[in-house]
Image (cartoon, rainbow, N blue to C red):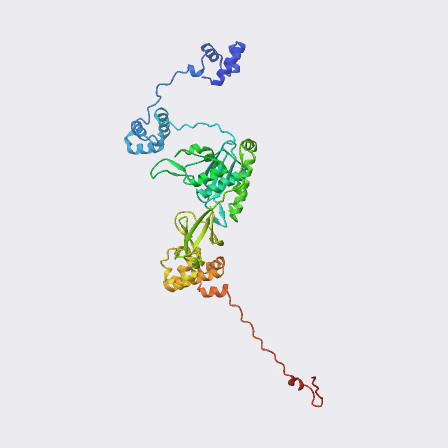
Length: 500
């Protein structure tokens, strides 16, 4: 039998020359074969008899009826899993591992004939300047470290479906604050405003109309953001992420691009969050530069930005509890004990918390995400714990007072050496010393004492080393000269004259 290409060459040559010999030579086949196909006027596939008989016994016939029953009940079963199950359950069928490929082909044929329909996707025509899609994606797989510590974060990702222009901002959660920051960063970079903003049904933008109801509506805060920029809010159907497919697909492409640039950079370590932001911006600018022509088409149809930008923080008023803490967004933060009972104002942004008393800024602390826990500054409570050392053992936030694993090892050593009561008191004195110096200085010294051969040490010894007592200044005696002693230096014969 000749190939399809040989058949087409043969028919073309015979139509041009009308000679079987020449046509057979050019089609690389014999003259009788050429004559057969030319006279039949049918292709090799049409002339070939259909194969309706078996050339060998069916090797999986012993397990196939049971396989069909199980596939009808659970079509998602994988062929290999089903095969391994059946050969163990029916050893008398004499089916071995060498028949796996035959069984997989049989399962594939069954799916093509009787299996469920697969999901159909419908290509969409995108209009320039119409929509901006926004979504969040976890960036933990990038393994970014800042200051030597793993930096867990998300990226708030905005994409224009027509031109594939994109921008991303780091954030900690899928919240309204991160949406506001990420959207405004994208719009400021773009310089214009599209017609629509499309998001998913996350709690940052929508909420249930009633408890247990499937229908959702937009949050008031999200609507106010859209009204400020003149955006028409739009959401996808519930559990239909494919409707936000442009940004969903771009999430993976963005992380792959970032990973490639991190490999070229040779390091995933950044000195500060601002350095990481600069790296992220450079990667995105390079990617967007290749889309400049399509972006210009979109910008020509967009509206200008409003003259003002929305604030990217929320104001929360809270009262300092008797535990010297405040509660902000379900997370506790310690404050100086002198403020117990006072009302404070907290400006809550995506990454930090600014605490005010009146107009005075008391502190700026990194924001903790979640709905539990506390951000405890040991300097706020150490003096009070020294006066009440017995409270340390059952203190609810005791683990927060072990500043590093080295401090935890130091505490265990002190308790083992001095006993629970004196060991706890010594550890509190160590924290007091740390508050007067620096955590790194104390930790560097503790490393020497908490590793074999575990030399003897004490907090007082550390204090003398880190805070040596200043030398006592010498006290100079007051000099009061005696004029008569000077006269004694003169000879007795010499007359002493005193000037009046």
